[in-house]
Every structure is written in C-alpha cells, then in structure tokens.
Amino acid sequence: MQVTQFLKHNFRHFNAAALIDAAEGYKKHLADGNKMLVTLAGAMSTAELGITLAEMIRQDKIHAISCTGANLEEDIFNLVAHDFYERIPNYRDLTAQDEEDLLNRHMNRVTDTCIPEMEAMRRIEDTVLKFWMKADQAGESYFPHEFFYQILLSGELEQYYQIDPKNSWMLEAAKRNLPIIVPGWEDSTLGNIYAGHVISGDIENVHTMKTGIQYMMYLADWYTQTAKEESTIGFFQVGGGIAGDFPICVVPMLHQDLQRTGVPLWGYFAQISDSTTSYGSYSGAVPNEKITWGKLGKDTPKYIIESDATIVAPLIFAIVLDM
Image 1 (cartoon, one colour):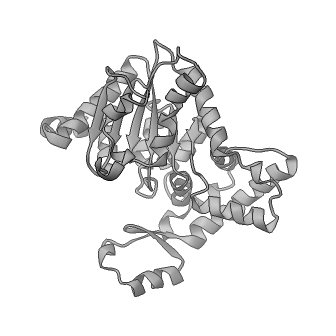
Image 2: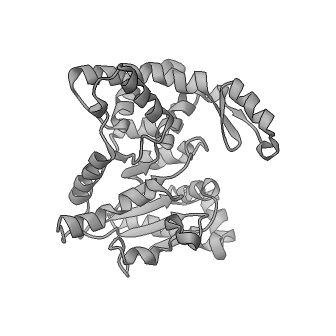
C-alpha cells in the first residue's frame, strides 16, 4: 500500500484532496455491494492506462466500460505493435515539415506518441476483415467490441504480442465478457476502414456492424437488469465527450421514455476533467447540473477532479486496488 499511503499523506487539499475523496467514495460504493461503470474519453489506451485498468477489471472493480472507438482499438494496437511506437517528448516544437515527415513514415501522432500504421492499423485490419466478412456472409451482426472479443479469444493475434498481455485491458475484458459500450464507433480508424470495405463491396451489409442505437438498447437492458434499489451502479468518468455523455443518459431514458420508474439513479458519480463550464461545455458541467436532467439525485455522492486524466486515473485506480 505504499502508493496509497503516500497519496493519503500528501494529497490533502484542492484537486489532490478531491482525488482522495473520489477514490474513497469509489471504494465505499463497491464495499456496499454496488457496481461501477467506467467511461474512457480520448486516447487513454495510447497513454497505456491498460496497466492499471486491466488490473481493475481483473479484481472485479469495474463491471462495464463505455469508451471511444479510439480507446477500443488503440489498446489492441498497443498490444501488437508496442515496440514500433515512437515517443516524441518535444512534440510542441515540431514544424509542419516535421509533421509531414512523420506522415511519410506512416507514423500517426497522438500528442507525444506515434502509432505505426503498418504494424498496428494494417496488421489489425488483415485479421479483423476476416471476422467482418465471415459474419457478413453468415448474415450475422455484432457490436464493435464483440468482434474484438472474437479475435482476441481466437488467439490469432498472440504471435504479434509485444507487451505483457496482463496489461491489455481489452484482453482482460474479453476473458470476462465485460459489457462494453462504444458510442460513435464510426469516429475511429477501424470505423473508417469498415466504411471503406462496405463501399468497396467486401462487406455487403453495412449492418453487419451493430449501431449506436443498438448500443443504447444494450445498455438499457444491462442497466435495468443490474441496477436494483439494494445495488446501484456508479459512474466513473475519465475525461468528457461522447464516452461519458452517451451512457449517462440511459437513466432519464429509462424513466422518462420507458416509464421504468423503479430503476434507481446512478449511485455514485465522479469525473476527471480539464474542461470548464464556460461556453456551454457539457463535459465541464458540474455534477449538480445532472440532477436537473434526471441522471443523479441530490444525495448521490458526487466528485470532480479538475486535472489531467493521464495522471489522476492511475492514482485513483491505485487507491481502489490498495496499492
């Protein structure tokens, strides 16, 4: 518990104290027999959040995930191509010519990290296309995460692993068949690749890939079956955007549109955010605003840490894991 002891001794005020409060609230929520949904914005997989996130899944500290298409695929990219990644610590000093040089080398930059197109995207495309076409020809349809589960569990990618598999959160999720929601999956590299294969005719039925509306239906069923008055679901939001905005709306939908008034509200809420409430930023909305939308209650434990998620999330996970 060295990390936890250090944090609790030193993180006493401001955002540091909010971090401790949110982590302790997370632990209490689970200790009371409740479940937790975690949302992942941006490119946290490329930031290698899987090192702690996979352990959280393994220790049953996370019961569902909502993430961007980027986070879904980039954990797999990292799994099979890690040795080919390049870090650019001086990325702020790059010129337009430097950026074009990276493009010509097929190195796609995410802040200070370059993802290698050939070893990551194209390597995955060769495998995933086989699974897409097989489902298409059989008249079957699956969610984006389900296709990845099939691929990971088939073992076809094992020959390419370049990190310790225990640090891949997607691999751990596949082993547990963890519920995953990927709103706006179309906004991802593989989403673009999928569209290309539909346009070219390799895939005949665009609905071989299930849609975002079907994801909301899937989430509604899971939430209704899982959330009980004696066992609520918490909402731990890493960053902002659609990964968080989409799933939190399931509760007002269940209450207002389906009249399932017996379904409880989210039982815990925490967000790590560097967004502000200015300019109508929904991702920066303070938790109390969500009360007016029927997502949280006045007594729901609420926390917000206004800081960098790449720093804060692993520390909160460390406390929850008693590291």
